Length: 220
View 1 (cartoon, one colour):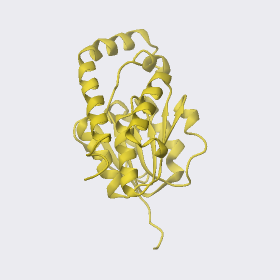
View 2 (cartoon, one colour):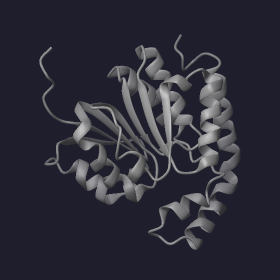
View 3 (cartoon, helix red, strand yellow):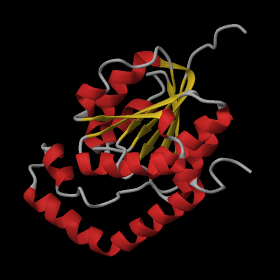
View 4 (cartoon, one colour):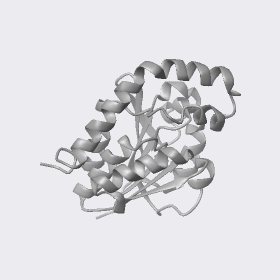
């Protein structure tokens, strides 16, 4: 048994996924409305119009996050785009099962932060997570751990290259970066796939890019 697969975490995650499934039908209309109304460069306006949408990772991606965090025994995780906290719960559960650590998330929509924090408290995982409110270009530009083991990119896709730049110097050799819906950020994909920027990267499933930060591990 793991923290992920037993109550209260498992029941909270299932409830959140069911809520996300129920929102799927109206999501297409919301996306269309947001794209039509928002300036393409104004990601804050665009996502503000989707503040009631869970926008979760898939069930498969969520499990992948837990598995990756466990497999590298991650203790320091950064998440760009918390939303209602489904991915956050999976990553925090991995931290708990790894023996502890810290997850720093960023989300600019206050109502989503409130929901995510409530779920983390109910799951008994809130002590492992700090969710920073505001634009991630600011919230993730300061007060980060010296080394980062795993990064989840799941916010505004156009910001993926900029967020990676903010975190890059702190990525340890062997750190993993999971980018959801990465096909919507061609610049990001070109960077991690080039073979000359210090990454090895492959697509996973239909909508995820999994990358590893190359480099030499310090001697044991």
